[in-house]
Structure formats: C-alpha cells, structure tokens
Image (cartoon, rainbow, N blue to C red; front, side, top):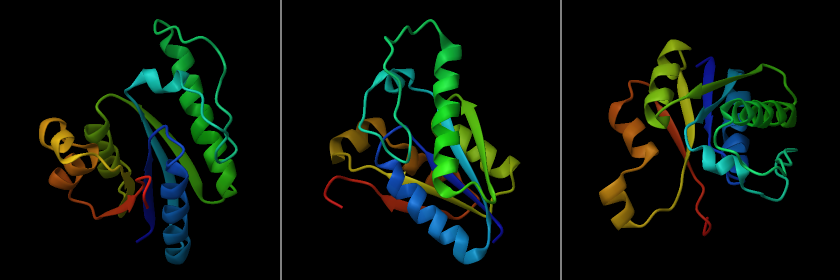
Length: 153
C-alpha cells in the first residue's frame, strides 16, 4: 500500500482521524493525500478553538461568496498538511456530495486505502439520514480504515 487518502470534515475531531491516518501511512511509507469536500458551507462560519494549527476565520458568513469558502477550506487543508510536516503529503479539495466525492477521488487518485472518521449518531439519525461513512463503505472498492470520533471515545 503506497497511497493513503485521509478524508477530513471541518470539525476538531478530524485531528484524531489525521493522527491515526498519518501513523498508518508512516508505517507503510505511503504517500498521503488530505482530502476535503466542500458541501455544507454553513460549517465554515463556525468558530472552534484552534486545532492542528488552524484558527478559523472570524468574518460574518455571506453564503453568496463561494470563493471565500473555497479559500477557507484550502487554508484548512494547507494548515493540516503543515501540521503533519508536509513530507509526502498533498491536498485535494472537491465540491459536491461528500460520499460521492470520496469514492470518485479515491479511484481517480488510485488510493490503496481511505481513512475517514465516523461520528456517533443516534440510530434514528442513521436510519433516516444515513451517514457518509456507511455510504462510502457500501459502495467502495478500496479498503477503508474507520476512526471513531465520537465524544465518548
């Protein structure tokens, strides 16, 4: 295995996913691609405590300015790559449905493994809404390493 795609959402729990994915990739001496999907633009206006060197932005959210969200997402990926040291790490930003983008890009990039987090959602939420993780697992042809990111982990 030489290529590990680490799928990140915009949440401080992503640090756990990055750490586990980076550790695994280092063991395999694999190339890493930090991958993020811009789909839920409302998250980019949220203020979190700094994580992985990323401090967010304190500007009022104007949903008409898609370019600003792209810049924020690119900055997030770049700061995360710097957090890892940058060696053997690339980034890729996609826009669209999260599960579809992960599936499409993992094949396009020829990933040997996809690393992603799974949030703790209630059974009712999973039943009616599904999750990105379950959608990816259902349709992937590439092995997936799931990192639990729930609060009680």
